[in-house]
Length: 172
Image (cartoon, one colour):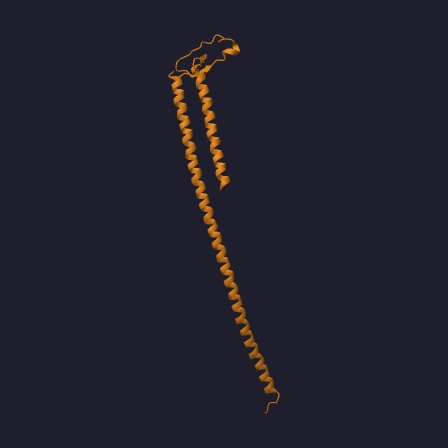
């Protein structure tokens, strides 16, 4: 049996198309594979650089936070030391007032009232008024005054601590 004359050229043509298609497909896959690999490499490099920037930024932020925490810790220690010193001074002052080792007195305005109004005046050589008319306060009243000034001192120290904290947070 003899094959028709057109079958061999047709078969050659089909094999040529198949081989050409396979070669084109392989070349195109190889080219696209290279392009995708380059794109993936560029993307990976970009991601690595972005990650490095973020890690460096986080490190800087952590360092800044540690510095702020250290500063606030030192500030707290300073303010608590001031508060303890004021409280111990206040306790000593109250003890001296209670033992009458120390007495508080006030200056009298003798010009406005025209005299001492029955209040005994004491003028000593060691007085602060240098001979001005003075009246001595009762020990319990003096202790209440010391307690009030102590509360005021504590409030001022707390206010200074708050102001330092806000300045530290705002400046960072």
